[in-house]
Structure formats: C-alpha cells, structure tokens
Image (cartoon, rainbow, N blue to C red; front, side):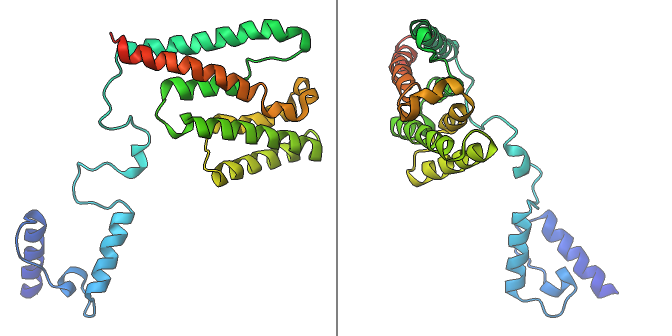
Length: 228
C-alpha cells in the first residue's frame, strides 16, 4: 500500500511539473504488467484524435469553425464600401440588360450571378474566384443541366443527376466554383430557359460572369488606391 501511494504521488508530481525528468513506469500509470511503448504511443495518438489535451488554452476543433478566422484584422471602411458598391453596380447593369432583353423573355439577374458577385467582390483571392474555375464550372455545369433535362425531363431525377454530375465535373476538372452548381437546377425548373437549349451553357451564366469580372477589376483597383 505504501509503495502504491509513493508511485501515485510521483505521478501527480510529474503532471504538475512537466519539465521534470521523472518518467513514471508504465504499470504505475495504467496498473498493467504488460504495457509496452507501442501501447503508450497508441494511447497518446487516440487522446490527440479525440481532443484530449492537458492545456485549457486550446479550443476544441469542434468549435473552431463557428468562430471568426484567427489572426484576421477587422476590415476597413473602404474594404466594405467598394465591394458593396461593385455588387450594386453589377445588379444595376444586369437589371438594365433585363429591360433590353424583356421582349425575348430572358433575364440576366439570375440567382447564381448574385452568388458569383459575393465570391468575386468579397473573397477575390479564394479558389472559387479564379477565372479558370469560374468559366469552366459555369459552362460545364450549365451544359450538364441541359443534358439532364433532355434526358430525364423535369423533376427530382434530373435535378439529382445534374447536381451529382456537376460536382463530379468540378472535381475532375479542378474547377471548384460553388455558384455554378445552381445553374443546372435553374435550367431544369425554369421554363423560360428551355428554348435556349445548349446556348444556356454560355448565356446568361458565362456572359454575366464576363461583366462581373470587369466590375471586379474596378473594385480591386479602388480598394488598392482609395483607402479610407
């Protein structure tokens, strides 16, 4: 009994003073006679995997994604104003184009272009804002939507196939651009786009992105040269 108390006190001393060179024996730690070094390494790895840490300063990985990015500085007023102004100008120009195209029953102010605006103006350095990613995904996913509609007709089978194929297409071509995944569903559910057939791959998604890219260049220039 005395020996067990001595071992327990030595083990607690090691926990309180990690810089101590004392290393408690394996069977004093676990109460087992046959614990080898490999078992101790496996236990340490399991503790790290489940977030069991000794320091209270480390946050659990479960909550990290619910917090703002660490080390990111608060945005300046110009970092807010110029992207917002770019988004306003984009929707205003697309709305003016809608008035011109109204006799043909085509609209340029489609929801995916609103998502593209957020990506281009708010996160211009993100992978989804790369020009290759944007145009490859916009054209490819829109064409997939047309193909799915002509193959399955309107309904959930066409939507399911189109979305799955769009995700696979973006992965295979390394052109991840989340707003493009909504283009196939927009075509399948939007009767006004059906008469475009495969022209839908270029219009209005890809054509609208050209306009948004021009506005993005203006926004980036203003952010770099007119700060406040």
